[in-house]
Length: 97
Length: 262
Image 1 (cartoon, one colour):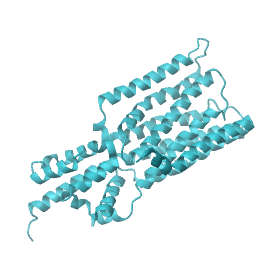
Image 2: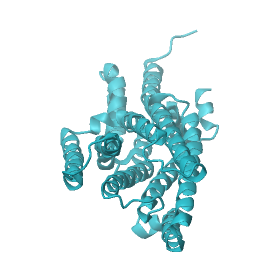
Image 3: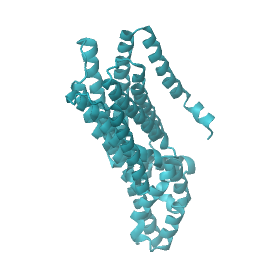
Image 4: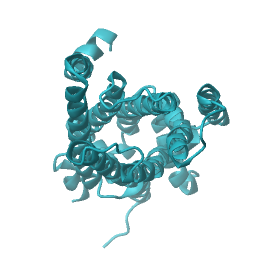
């Protein structure tokens, strides 16, 4: 069995960080975000690494003016991986106002 | 979304508020006893509906996360306030005695710090968005409102007894809770989750005005249960109820999220 590549590891790290940030608010918020992702974009939270704009739009729709505070939490959990170029790109797109 | 669209979307809610207002005026027009019975029943019924809704939303949130804990606090506060309404109604309708002050006040007053817990926990995930300016402005508004009330209600012949202390506790608690409620109004200006917060904030504002008013009319002894201003308490419960109901609708989840884990 081969070891997962860097892309897969980063994708999992991003997924877990976003899940943690959303669950910190509440399980229902996490569930609602994943539900909208599936309904609107036919994607899962795991796919947000490749399409951070989906998450960006959902969070904007949901939290309105408080969007920034929510993305700050995601940023906080991803801080230790932010030296990775792809993670930086993800943060930039998700936090885009 | 235009104002007309928003009003159309929530027309049932608007009709309910207007209906409550008219009902209070009509029953007051009939006679004071009918108004009293109607008011007591309305308080118990609206508080009971809110207890059911709040338990549903707390259960759905599984008491976890900031919002889960917030809704648990909300449900607990509603249970305490419902108990207050029931005790007040029993005293008034069954024993035919003046329930002011009574054990009902204990339940209402205990409900306040619990409701404060709800306001705090609900804002925890967005605490970074709360600026010092927001806190200062909210505090100034709350303190000014309380100071104005104390100034207006002050009477040198007034007896500073237990009854007055209980009456004063309400606006003091209201003013403390007005701070996170106003911060909430500043924060939740847009976004889907804002309707619930707007409703809860407006509902709480109704409570604040009603409690301030209650103290003033208690001081000049012009209060009677069923007084048209009592509609503010029913409006408060209705606003809370609509907010929670709307939130429940937004967060109705299907089984899709479970697939996310597989």
